Image (cartoon, rainbow, N blue to C red; front, top):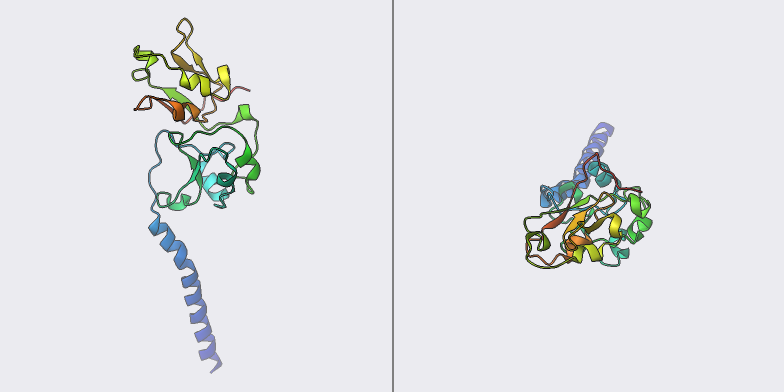
Length: 200
């Protein structure tokens, strides 16, 4: 009799364990992974550089998005796979103003407070074949005037007051992408080459 009772309890515990794992399995099926965009896909400032480590450290609490003044931080939903509820920034929608609030609010090591000049979200890149001043289709300079880091991140090419060039001091905040008036957005943020690190 005792053996039968123990067997029933064992089966019940196994069923309970399987039932408790079911939501996790279903959630990953409902939110299949999707390839990350090659451009304009940024982690918030202060994020761990290794994306797998960032996803593992982030608990999906949403505090970084709650404290973000321009509401540029968004969260993966059905497109995220294992990245569901992790934050990202799409600068075509809204760029980061480098206010540091998200880094201060994060309760884990996913986002850590670092000096503004050492933030590395990527680096801006300009398609000179589409940028208005570079193809002599007008005067712009929106990207240069909006940059929170000024001349150490982006400035005008010497001898031509309106053609923007990206410098090593760019931290990839994406404000230049947000304000670009060209329909094709010829400026975007890409992953920084290992050789280049933001200048302090």
